[in-house]
Amino acid sequence: MTTYIAPIEDMMFLFEKLRNNKNYNEIKKYEEVTPELVKNILEEAAKINQNIILPLAKTGDENPTVLENGVVITPPGYKEAYKKFIEDGWTSLSCDPKYGGQGMPKTVSAFFDEMLSSASLSFKLYSELSIGAYNCISHHASDSIKNKFLPKMVEGKWSGTMCLTEPVCGTDLGLLKTKAVEQSDGTFKLTGQKIFITSGDHDLTENIIHLVIARASDSPKGTKGISLFLVPKFIVKDDGSIGSRNGISTGSIESKMGIKGSATCVLNFDDATGYMIGPKNKGLSSMFTMMNLERIVVGIQGLGISEIAYQNSLNYAKERKQGNANNTKANNGADFIIEHADIRKSLLNMKSIIEGERALCFWLSQQTEVSLYHTDEKIRQEASDLVSLITPVVKALFTDMGMEITSDAMQIYGGYGYTKDQGIEQLYRDNRITPIYEGTNSVQAIDLVFRKLVNKNGDIIDKYISLIKKDILIKEEKINPFVKKLNENIEILFKFTNWVKEKSKNSKDDVSAACNDYLKVLGLVATAHAWVKVLEVSFKDYENNKKFYEEKIQTANFFFNRVLPRIESYYLTATSGSKYIMDFKFN
Ligand SMILES: Cc1cc2nc3c(=O)[nH]c(=O)nc-3n(C[C@H](O)[C@H](O)[C@H](O)COP(=O)(O)OP(=O)(O)OC[C@H]3O[C@@H](n4cnc5c(N)ncnc54)[C@H](O)[C@@H]3O)c2cc1C
Image 1 (cartoon, rainbow, N blue to C red):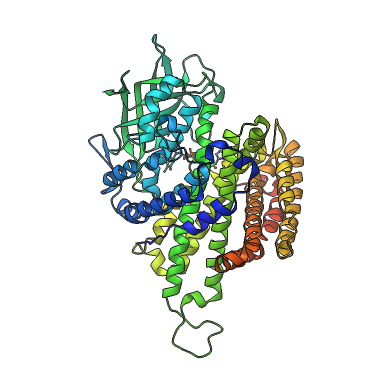
Image 2: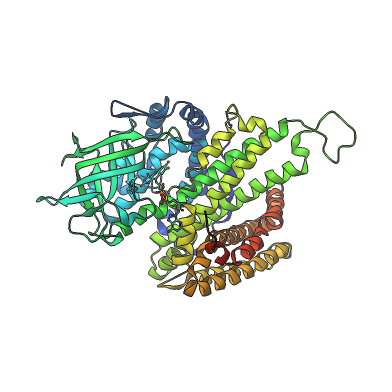
């Protein structure tokens, strides 16, 4: 079984030392979220994740969720753990106190999301979609719906889902067939089939609140005719108590490569009663509130799984002896494999990516809070543009890197990584869904290049590049080599951006064939930017925590010399164009 120690020191470093974000600090409601409070929360979070949830990862993999007589049964131990999980208030961490939440900022809940992803992604998914549904309802529903449904969801007694996918529509939601017929009392009757629904049914909560997209009878075809509905598993009476079963049944659950403890359901809606959320035919934009926040959380899943893969590889490399390292003086039998340059390179690759990603995620969490709660509308809008630019980057880069890191972890373990005992191959299998769901990573890249670089508020990517350039004007001699390297790569990003903008006018296939590379280039620049912020503190505060900061500086050194230069090859391959790709005749 894998082991896991929550990286609290690194998290607290970010929370305490990278707080000097003026706009974020101006949000009054977080004034009382002090480092002491956050440290207490993270210590408690570490306990439940390390002691109670981590063992469920293996249990869930070996005893997948089953459907018996129409009832979905979660793996052994899930029910008890979930009960403790909600009793301790973990579902309410980032929710509004008005509905019983603890009102913690995303800078804190993101750390919890990371720990939970490291411990067990399958278990995490039961509460994750509830938080997503909570966010969507609290942004778009009427007060009466909010008051009726949110307190129980915040408490964790009711969970939530996101029902988009159907047999014929995954990426292209405009093809959806589920119908919604309005009733005389203003409610709707929904009929259709949804597939691949995470936590679509299970035995952990008293009720399940489905957020379903469907087409009202008189709505147009395509994405312009999609509305959003709240459809509970059990009808909720006016006094808030649970009534009769709604017209929703579980057709089957998927047998999957990974996340086997998570129930991925086929749901059949047969005249199920639903309530419209937000305006008619604007369902997709309402649903995007949920999807955008979810995409960041899926990125964090990749980060969390990478962290546990790294920790276990490091431990293994310190214990496993094979061969002599190049600089061994005498033949002493065999050295620990951590002495081999190739293994060290692999470990540092993981560490430098993970710590850079965590710092980038912290920055994005701050921006998300500013975009939601700053009092100045202009500042809110600017932050919102940055969040929309970096969200697909975090989703796709972190989950792709998760594949690289879990694969490298398996490689460090050799044959013992491929066989089941150590739990390493499970990390690879569990992570494999993250580049697929919540919009595939290619779809993230398409979204980035065709919709996010420039929007109605202007040239967002240019504003972002200017912001980075301003941020890295640091007059600290020791940072210069890092800043110089980042500037060289910003130049490549700049050239690549101009190429994309130019090709977008009349050569869209060139852009489509380049968009995954573009996303990685932007992602690596963004991660390097986050690293520079970390370095700034590391040099300034060096004397106060030499060991910690020395490790940071050396890890950054690896990132800037070994990871960041990947940018050039992405740029060169992508800008070779698409003609030879599109002209090829597949037989
Ligand atoms: C375990 C699991 C859990 C899931 N949970 C949920 C859930 O809770 N709720 C929910 O609604 N859905 C859920 N899904 C569905 C998931 O979001 C979809 O599988 C995903 O969005 C891709 O859709 P698809 O499978 O239909 O693939 P398709 O859309 O058919 O795509 C197939 C391939 O074509 C590519 N592609 C598609 N369109 C384009 C394009 N325009 N340009 C270039 N390439 C393109 C894709 O990138 C992909 O590589 C889940 C799926 C799984 C497996």
